Length: 179
Image 1 (cartoon, rainbow, N blue to C red):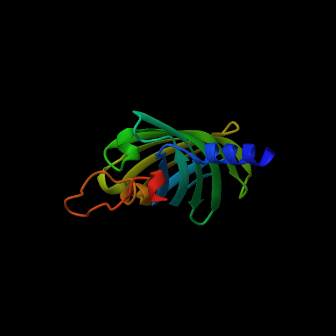
Image 2 (image 1 turned 135 degrees about the vertical axis):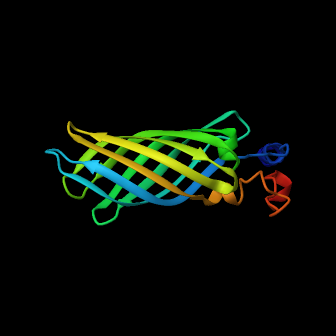
Image 3 (image 1 turned 30 degrees about the horizontal axis):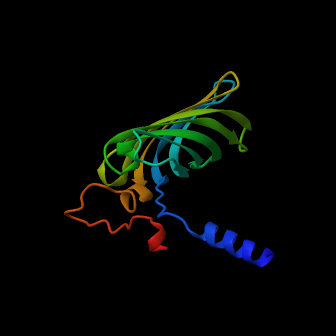
């Protein structure tokens, strides 16, 4: 009796409708310049390398909300690490025209160490091109401003919904029968 019940339960749990899932994901690499002012008026301007990766809700919604991990290397100085929340338009998430706003906290372990707040506005162009403007603030008298341009590799490849006539995007829809 117990064996028949377990068999019936296993059979019931193994039957499922086709599942479909889609997420927004970001994998950006860019470069530019940053300037910062330290407590006491010391100011520096140098090259900036920005790398980020993150994941969010489906790009089918008008706004996809997600989380992002970022490193910002100020050449000749050091690297800031940030954990941020992102709100991105559907166009941005699909590799087309759109905007993304990131807000979060960063940590600096080089020079005068600090923890602060960071905000970024990114403009997404077709083919995964991003232009990002970042501002950060930590304790009175410390700020950072950066501007980068680069490519979001996830938006250029798997999430791209534009330019299919020049470079086909061979992404497959995720469905249970494809697994």
